[in-house]
Length: 92
Image 1 (cartoon, one colour):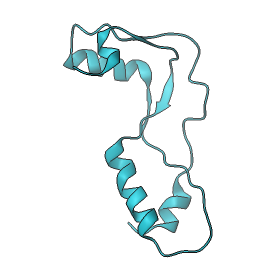
Image 2 (image 1 turned 90 degrees about the vertical axis):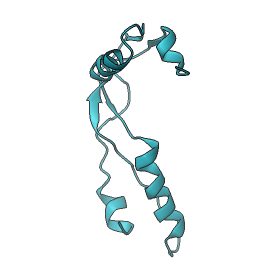
Image 3 (image 1 turned 180 degrees about the vertical axis):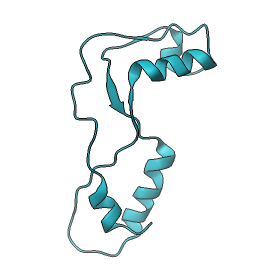
């Protein structure tokens, strides 16, 4: 696999993290640039909030010999951001 973490690197934090995938972000970006509007707005995009440790467990289920780990303090940023404003502002 090409992902550097599959070679045995350590994620330098642990705990909950908002996992936003490119396939989820892309439609929001396309809707934003296609939307007729005035001014500039800033929105949060939020994905599922899951512990880094759980995701590592899932990766190890797919690639059992991976050496990926996590250590250190809890992820230092807010993980449950409110994304209802973007949902209200942009068409689905």
